[in-house]
Structure formats: C-alpha cells, structure tokens
Image (cartoon, rainbow, N blue to C red; front, side):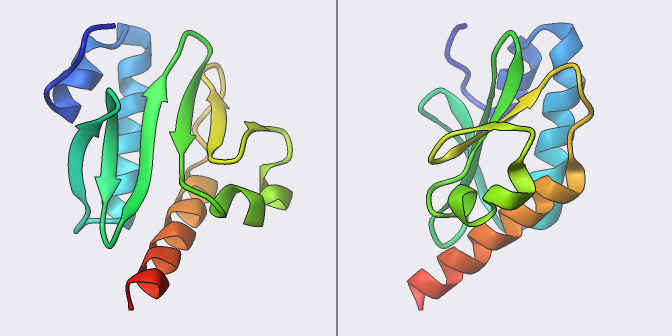
Length: 118
C-alpha cells in the first residue's frame, strides 16, 4: 500500500469492497468528533482533539480502530467477540461496523483527552 497524502486519498486507494466501510468509519468519527483535526499519521487516518482520539486502517481481513490506552481495557466487557489489543479493536470486514460501540469508544477517548488537558 502506498502512502496517502489525505484521508480521502487513503480511502480511494483501498480495494473497492473496503472503501464503503472506510467512508462509514470516517463519517462515524466525524459525527462524534466534528472538531477533530483529520490527518494521516503512521500511514493511517488520524483524528486529534486535545490529543489523539483514534486512527483507523484496513487489512485483508479487518478494519483496525486504534484508540490509545486505556479505553480498550476500560471497555473490555463491551468488546467480547472482537479481537483486541492494548489499543486496537479489529472489526471483521464481513460484518457490519458496530456504529454504537465505535461511538461509545470514541466518546470515552474524547472525555479522557478532555480530563488530561484540563
């Protein structure tokens, strides 16, 4: 995958079957964090407001939603059924994006960032 200069370019460079889900992920993030600065960092779309909120990226099998710790650990109960790591939730491509869960995680990170910056 070649480096993209913008989030729209990143999405456009993805396989056609994945683009719709990536656009949906972007829309979810922008709905929850309309003031977030959107950029490409580490080769992935990144969203920042009072610190990093989230990144996302696609692979052949999933879309990774990367939220800095401790959010994934704090919501482990809601993430059963998903492959996770310290800062990642892997959302299988063959399943619908869990919009409500994604919004919950993003809101939690935004609240965490707000507490850290005050």
